[in-house]
Each structure stands twice: as C-alpha cells, then as structure tokens.
Image (cartoon, rainbow, N blue to C red):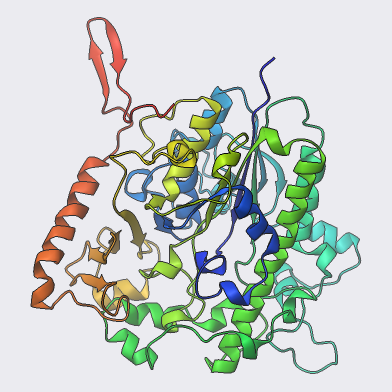
Length: 514
C-alpha cells in the first residue's frame, strides 16, 4: 500500500521576512520556526505578488497573478470557477480542510442578492471544508469560547483593546483582556489539533491560517511586554514623513491614511513618537513569538503522532508589514517590507537538503503548484506559478526567473480613495506593478504618473533614481521586462486548448518537474 501523503499548509498573517533573517531577527524569539528551518528548505527571496490580505490569499491559493484573478481588493469577488488549491486537491481525492480563513469575496453572479455570503468579504474559498471559522472581523466560535470562559465585553471589537491592571488609562503594551491560553492563536491551534487527530492512516490536506501578528496590535500576557521597547530598533526611514512624501506623489496619500493609530484599538490618538513606535513594534514581535510557540505545538504533535515523516509542511505569510519603516504602516505600498515574506518547506525524505537556503527569486503563486506537484496532481494552465519541487531537491532549472513581480491596486469603486482624489486616477488606472531583479526595483503606474526606480547598489529604497540620466537605459530595459512579463503571463485558462476535428486538445503550460 502506498505511503499516505499529508499536506499541512500554514499561513501566518502579516509576518515580515526579516523577523527570521534581517533587521528584526536579533530582536525576536522564534525558536520553533528557526528549528524548523534546520529541517527544511528556506527561500530567502520570496515575495507576495499582491496585497492586501484578500488579494494576496487569492494569489497564494489560485497560483494566479492579480492581473489574472482580478480579486484585487478586500471585497472584490473572485470568479467562482477559478481553480484553486482546494478544487485541485479534491481532484486528487483529498478533502481540503480549512482551519481559519481565506478572506475570499464570493462571486455575486452565482448567488441570490439576499444571500448573506455577499455581505462579508471574509468568506471561504470554493472547495474548502471550513472546519473552524476563525475570521478577524467575525470569529464567532472564538467569541463563544471567550464568553463561556467568563470574559465580558460589550462588543466584539472590545476584545482587541488593551486592559489596564491598575485602573489607569491603558498603555499601548498593556495586556489583552484574555489569557494566553484563550487567545485567538491558542484557540485556533487547539481546534486544529483536535480536528486533525482522527485523520490517521489516510492522506489529508489541511490549511491552517493564523491571524497574528496582524493588527490590532494587542497581545495577552506575557507576550504584551515580552520585549522591552527600548531594545527594539527604530524603523528605517528618512528624517521626516514630509521627506518621504517628496520621493513620489504616491506616498503622500499612503502616509496620511495608514497611521499608527489605525493599528490599535481603544486610543483616540497615537502620536508617532519614537517611544510609541518602539512599543508597537515590540507588541508585534510579541505576537510573532506567540504564533511561533503554537507552531511548535503543531510540529511536536506531528512528530509525536508519527505523521511528521508523511507530511509536507509549508510555512509562509500572506504579505509583510511596514511597521513604521519609511514612516509607514500596513502593506499598501511599494517597499520590500510589505511584500518580502518567509517561505519554509519541508518534504519527507528530503533530509539531504535540510537547512539549505534557496536564493533565486520565488513568488507566492509558486506555493500551490508545488503542493500539487508533490502529490502528483497536475496544476491547471490557469496557474501562473511554477512548482518549487526541483529547487527543494537542489536543482535550479536553467530557465528559472531572474526577477519577481508584484502588483497593488489602490482604488475603491464605492468610495474613491485618497490616492484617487489627490492623484486624479480612476478605478482602472489606480494600480501599479513592481519588478525586482538582482540590482533594481522598478515601480510603474497604470496612470500617468512617473515611475519609481531604486538602485540597491546605491541608496536602495531611500532614493528614487528614475529621473537620473545615467539610469535611463536601465529604466527602459526594466520597463520592457515588465511589459514582456505581463504579456507572457496573460490568462492561460484556455489559451493552450485547441478545438480540432478529433476533439479538444491541450498542452501543458510548463514542463512537468517530476
């Protein structure tokens, strides 16, 4: 009888790559993720192909660039017939179990106008069996758990407000009202361990998605003040927000809308002082450590239950977080901190590659084709990503990409964004593309706005060199590369099918890696 092939696909929401390697790595304890890296393969130049949460997960789970799936904002529907990791795993005989959320907006064309599914963007992607609902803005099972435990709150969002222990006004790093054992992260992990336990002796696929360290930035004790804010480095930034805005017209609306105040609850204002910024960064790192603790529980369970060596384990993030860098918060921007994410994959029987690092560019759309490749299921041509299986075995294909590509849409059809109001852009041209190669990062806009070019052999993201004559040839070369990339990756759902006298035929988009 063939050995069961299990897949556990974990997404951590809004975890920066440099928490594991880079600027913040020495300031946060992630012992379980670091131990896992020693047993797995780490991809050091891995990027989300779009932001924010809903679009990034749409790309992760469908293997498509945003320019093809077009679920480009939280609340923008994903076409109901778009193939995804769950629909394709079902074809291979798996029941795709979801522990958490996918932030998928339903296609209104296939639902009645009164269907409640059309009133929240936090729905489950087609094909998944939602074992436990754990959505940031709803989380009814967790709310019920808290109420059963005796916690009191007037409304759900009060749960995310820090609570003072001495009757004084709360501080930014005061603890949450719930204990660590009752947190959203603990609750979800408990639900996963209980839900996966009966699935033994059979191949299973589970998608486990942690909300943290996504804001609101509030953590239970001891994670709320685990790190001394004075020990946390200040963000990487120019001397003032005004100086940041002068780099390009795009940055003014960004900095005016997404401020530190938007990332906490219970405070009328959060002044962007160094002390406050360090405190919020410390709470974020505490939440990351909390997630690490519970991932350690999951890995221990797999090992103790004898399933570790039957299971492909993928750990990544949907996108990054600015965390005060460039006087900026969130992920609606163009800088690497908002897109550069961890990707760590362990395959059974791949010990020879344990602890290795892959330094060629990889993209979030590669994850789903990799999982499908490992279980022996062919990825449909609609998927733009490529399987990482050869790279996991130490073989870099000669035709592997030399750059990464991301997109961002900054429009809102119902309520025009500050970008649209100030830049005079519409719903179809309020978007940008980002191309990163070994030296440069190019940002091009659909609207009539000047490009942005960063030279990483110079001042990197701290200087826009797009208008300097000595970089004119590089600007043209990279712009042509971006155009070619978009042309080569236009929707392939049916483009390689042919209707012939012998019936329908099709060709595979990429050569099989097996």
